[in-house]
Structure formats: C-alpha cells, structure tokens
Length: 269
Image (cartoon, rainbow, N blue to C red; front, side):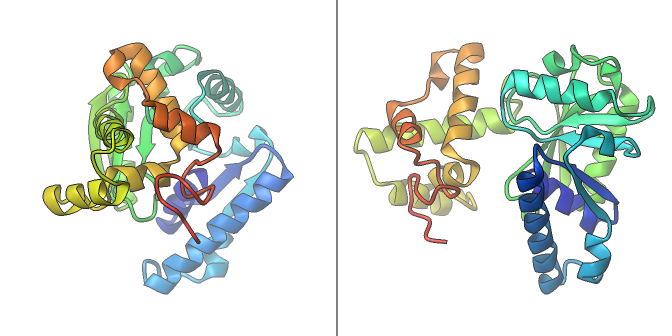
C-alpha cells in the first residue's frame, strides 16, 4: 500500500520519500514502485520517462529522511501500537508547518491524533488497493483536524486524479464499515454452503454492478487485514462484525489471499 501511495504522488509530479523498516524492505519497495511507474508509462498515464520518475523517488530506512517533506502519509500495518509509535517518530522529524496523515482503514483517527504534539495538522487519508487503479480517497477528519487541513486534503486527492469523500471519524469510517459488513456476510454464506465464492461474487458483480465481488476484494486486501478490521469493528460496534470461523481458519492456515497465492480464490500469478 505504501508503494502504491508513493507511486500516485510521483506520477502526479511530487518528489517522494519512502521509509521502510530495513534494507531488504526498502529494496523491495523500490522494485514495486519502479515496476508500477513502468506500467503507468506503458498505459500512457504519464508522458515522463522512467528515469525522470524514479529520479523523484528516495527510499530510506530512517525517519530522518522525512525532514524536508511537507506531507507524510503513514501506511504501516493495522496495529494501534505500531501506528502510534510510527506517527510519533515521524512527527519528531517534521517541521512545524508540515502535515501528517494516516492510511488506516478502520482505527480511530482521533485516538491516533491524541498521541501527537500537533493534532490539528493530522487527518486520515484512506487510499484503496490497488492505489493506481482506485479512483477514491476517503478523507477522515478527527475532531482536532483543522479546517485548513480538511480543505488541503480534498485538494491533494483531486490533484492525484482521485475523488475524495469526507467522513467524520467513526469506527470503520464509511467505506470499511460497509465493505466489511458485505464481505463478512459473503463469508458466512460460503461457510453455510449457500453458494460458492465464485457465484456469490458473480451475483454482486452482475446484480449490483460491483466492479469486483466481496470475496475477491477480500483476497486483494488480505484476509489477515480483513480479520484485523473485523475484530476492531466487533469490539467497537458489536457482534454483527464478529469474524466468521472460516476467516479465522484461513488466516491460521496462511491463506491470506493474493499475497500468499490462496484465499477464497487461487492466485496463480
């Protein structure tokens, strides 16, 4: 997801800094970004050369690399302690007039803002996977988010060629809350033998015009990610978001979706 966000800003003309946890992760991120930029050139999404695009991308392993940045988007895994530590560490490196955002898909933006020294300069920028193909960014406003930042966030989304929707901070926001509710019910239908994953997804694609069915979307997002979101929503919104056993079992077996090669579907690529 972080590589996708970096790709989006780079194609839009920004200089981009990506910080990863170690050298191996940094090299892998560089490879993903370069490959995505190359695909954008092939599709005609940009008329710049690969050399020009990659020349605007810096990959590092130290938060100090963020010092010159005017905006940093945190995209670490959906773990409150991990995000809190990352955001605190990043904020220490930024100038007082820089902006900070989280890409969380479910955690409380207000709670994250509460650990920062400048909570008024912090909001949620929820990108969707895969970032290059998605046309939506969910702008999540915490109670402390300034009006100036709310306006800037909408402008950033539009500058990336995407459409912003603005929501107030609440568990799951709008997109995750609705998307997870549909996906969990689809999983229960598989669990109960109502229909196959293929037929459930086809019903939603053809009957409701969803571009991708809820179970294939779950595979793309990652079953482990969906499980974490469901557990959080269940703890905040109630048992209607309790993860079904089939989801827990698949995650326990390492069937995490596209990234592992197997989820509700098989991914040969």
